[in-house]
Image 1 (cartoon, one colour):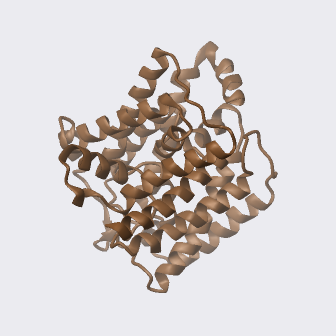
Image 2 (spheres, one colour; image 1 turned 180 degrees about the vertical axis):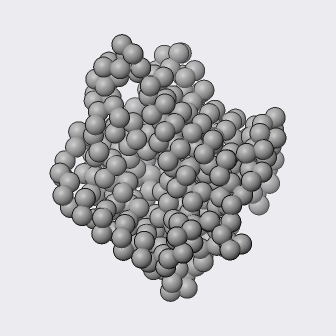
Length: 339
């Protein structure tokens, strides 16, 4: 337990620090594409994915760990769950990891969103919405009795896809401007740092018997399970990684004078709670969130993660329309630019 705790905290603190300094939140990443036509955070996200595509698969080829933990392709669940999760992101104002690191900055709205996340996930995994989860997971797609991935679907060596995506993505990133409107680290520094941390999470997590990379849904589920039951065996490496994430973000915010307890009005708190609730429901149905699917699963070409992430993007855009549609759209653009 001590070893698992130490290794989890080390990665979590580094991850939280990088998220806070890079202002890296996937709600902002996908929202900004539509609202302010800014691709700064998208570039950081793509760079992190490319680093993992090469790094994780290289280490797996060396036998450091296996890639058997790819999420099953419950196609209805990933499409619907991802969409619900995306709407929840837009309403709460942050993704699962974004809400976590902003909690370390003292943002009460993000803390409320995380509480909603726990309620939504618990209701879906173990409560009244469990039949809904079972319904959407009733159909699973496999390829040759293995988890469905893009390379298996196309019948090609995965390294061919790694080379193609790295070449195309690298070419676009090299042609991209260095700056952006967000404060903190540049997109290149953010993407590089987060990509390296996410890659290193695989072998470090494997040392504790958990062969997977970064996740947020699983850690929150294990911690809430421990708090509700008192069973310490529910805790995993990811549990302590998530705690470290908050601590790392707090350290970063304190170091740069950016920590302050901030609470929005009652209406905004209710919106954050509702958004968090939808995120929890969506993550439980889809089997992961913007980190487990969007950051960790996509570089493995898992169809479950790729479809879930695309659905999250559509959900965020639907949420943006709900929040800023009609006459309020221009006001939403201005508020996003000032955020």
